[in-house]
Length: 142
Picture (cartoon, rainbow, N blue to C red):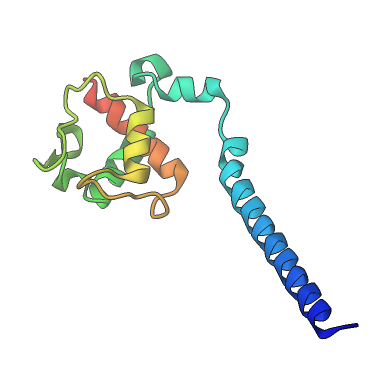
């Protein structure tokens, strides 16, 4: 077999291998991006989270205390005003009397942050974030 035929076959083989690797990487990336949508909560669960606390039930005294403790222990009151927790901050929005807050909104902000608000996802558990959001929405609506 002539040398140029071998060289051509080698180049085709390398090109095919490169395409295969690129295709595999793209498929892996696409499936990783699609995974969160597959594990997302049903629409009905999100609908409840988007309602004000009065529409989704109230926390008992123990859960309110736990929420207040989270608010204090994570220094939320350094930036946010919330009388129930003794928060007097002026950097972030005041929660007192804001009847438009929703649990879904608070969960998103606490988890992902935005602007000067840091993200706490990965530092607090999903359950702690949900409890904190329920607490804020419930006591701020008073």
